Length: 201
Image (cartoon, rainbow, N blue to C red; front, side):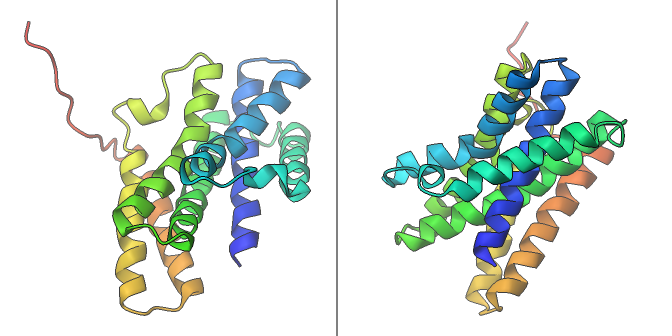
């Protein structure tokens, strides 16, 4: 289940990166590049922070093939993704939910405190998108008013609440990822945002 979720999240973020690249009218190399950095950026940073060497995707070709497959699917079905913004939101949100869980599990695997595990989950979920947005010449979503990283933190709290209630792990995964997806989509539809702190005039 864990490995399946990891690859599913990788594919979702690969599609997300490819959609941004196509929206920016990049060439094939640019599409592949954005797919790769979106899919593995957060996980790479997480592995470096917790001292996993070499990082996960360097020792498992499944990541490589999954990213290539996600990129090809995005290109083939690009006409189906006519509403690029909505498609990007969907795939980005799926990746966000799954990679939050992956980061938390990786932290728990090396015995880190729950607060640090939730932080790792947020890093894993968000920083591939940060790199994607920077390369796409956009302000990263995480730094805008939109609720993004906050959703990962809330998801982490849901995960630990269910964990301490001894809920079965697979059920925990489904409920936590479902909560992240639902809150993220509601935040976009309802235009929820964190308050801004403005400098005095």
